[in-house]
Amino acid sequence: DSKRGAAVYIYNCAACHRTDGNGYKRVFPALAGNPVLQSEDPTSLIHIVLKGGTLPATHTAPSTFTMPAFDWRLSDQEVADVVNFIRTSWGNKGGDVTAKEVKALRE
Image (tube, rainbow, N blue to C red):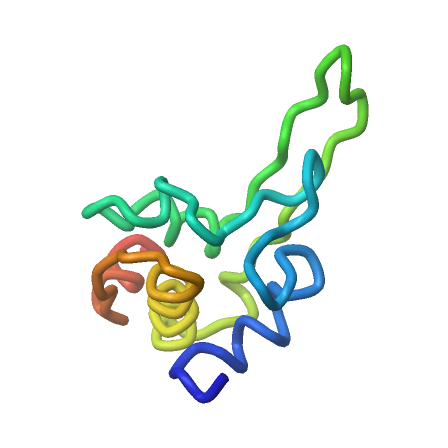
């Protein structure tokens, strides 16, 4: 895909969330059609890209899975680009994020 942010996604996200955005059931969440990614407020998604996150273990799924933080690796513009790519790919209908918004959350 030649959309801005696609290369950042391929190199940093696709191994877990797949190139089709469908993730891996019960392991890595699907991004395609995910309503959280399409909300008006992108703060949670930006924060997860910057700081990562861990799915908690449960009785039926005792293993935890961790998404690494990308704040050390990606610039504000790259984070904005990949968030925009995720929010507008695979039928998602999220709005635009700016590097300025990312910078404000990074600080």
